[in-house]
Amino acid sequence: MPRITRRPRQSSEEIRRIVSRIETLPHELVGEVLARVAASSVTDIINAKLSCKTFKEIGEDSHVYHHMSLDKLFTDSWTPLRKEQQVFLNKCWKSENPDLLYRKAILDYFHRADVGSACKYLLKAVDARHVGALYLACIMLILTDDEKFKEKGIEMISNMQKSTWLRGKLTLYRRTLMVSLRRMWVLNPILNRELVFCQTRHQNHWRSGWRDMDEELQCQACCVDREFTAICGSV
Image 1 (cartoon, helix red, strand yellow):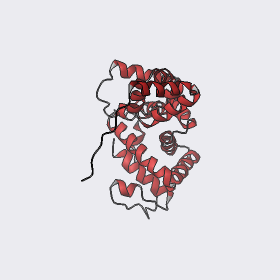
Image 2: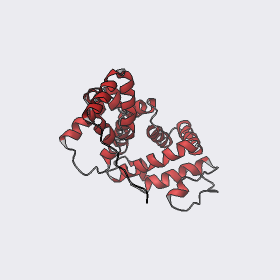
Image 3: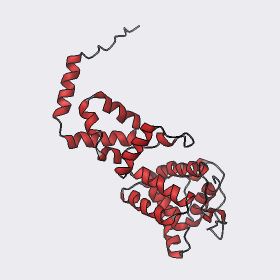
Image 4: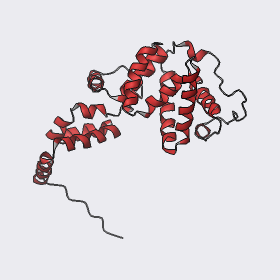
């Protein structure tokens, strides 16, 4: 049986040398690294900021808060935010965090029925290349009474579904939107009307389930019907 050896702990002197080397790195480079960490996990960026003074100082930069992932913070919207969570969100808001702007647009459009405010924040999130914001923009375009906007929204969401990379993102943000709708009073009456886009219904026969939601359909209108079947079902 092979002998198991424990990895020796780093001495305080070794740790000081590592920290010293980190402090010599350009702050712009460290900030970019921390921003990537923040985009991946709130827990990881918190641990990084606790590890050394340099990370703590640079981790407070608006660039880091701009890229901060907020998924874990919104797992339970029924629980009131603690004071430190509210402070954290305020920093993200001041840094125009696209994920927060995107969630604000969802609230304004579906709960407050304030299309103007929703578009204002949504455009900022789209400019920051937030895929969820682009998906929501497609949904809002399709729900307009303008036929040109409606056709553009249908075309965009169909093209997103044809992209292998974007299809995976769509699954995530479709689920995010559905969860958000379940947790709010949807006061915008636009989802109360019958929404059918494929008049022929020649392909609009899929089984229920997430796997089928991601299967590619040739008919653009059927793609949209499938999206709204899922969305309206969560209201």
